[in-house]
Length: 315
Image (cartoon, rainbow, N blue to C red; front, top):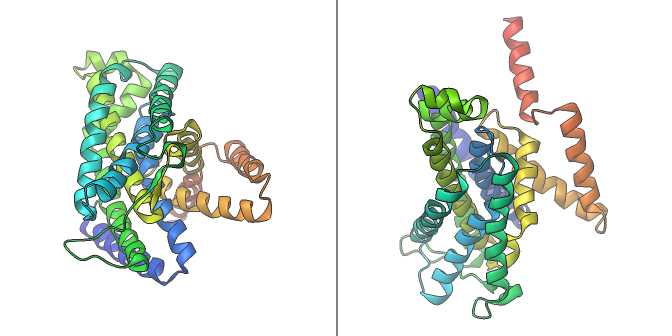
């Protein structure tokens, strides 16, 4: 990524922050949630580019959220940077252990085993009265380097941090995909045996991607917990992980910006669908995904690629 691209990305980030702060409170809230989910889907996209679909990203999404909740409520730690680091550390530790088993499987076995671990966490949380069982518990307002904002300003703080993380992690993700390690994921998808013959380790490639995806999911869960002020076991339920897969299919895997844009569009579509048809809003989402699969099998980002190709042909 060139210096010019980085400068444009920085300016875009500032514009997004300014726009988010000027939005009505409910729109700013939805945008922040979308940024958190977009980071989770970014990790999922890394796995999908290696030919793996995880229905268990809700596990790390929930772990990140619960670590944030427990630190603020039970330990009095409210600094958002400390909370982020702790959430990532715990999730990466869990992923490092689970990944030793999970990364040996492919296709439907990887998808189902990942979902199984997520559902195990869901079952444990539902039966844990200390953590609020099915109701969960509230999360205290975050602070930053000793500054403790009020409730309204706290949501703005989470928004600013979320956008900064999206810009930073999106840039790092793009560099990673353009590195040898990033291309190795595509080699795993196309031909594992050939990669092994070339001296690469398929297990190591998948294992690293799995841990990165877990870290990104933890950050997304932390953002969601801090902006919503509440956590509950539904964050680990299989439907939550399915929602991330929905967003990934909606945006496509061609670019790191695709899951982030798709997450914003998904939140907007779901809000509109629920307002129009509160009892059948899932059907509207289903028809939207079906239309994308039929007419844009590579996701919404394929529209950007078509525009770029058409522009290149004209020049």
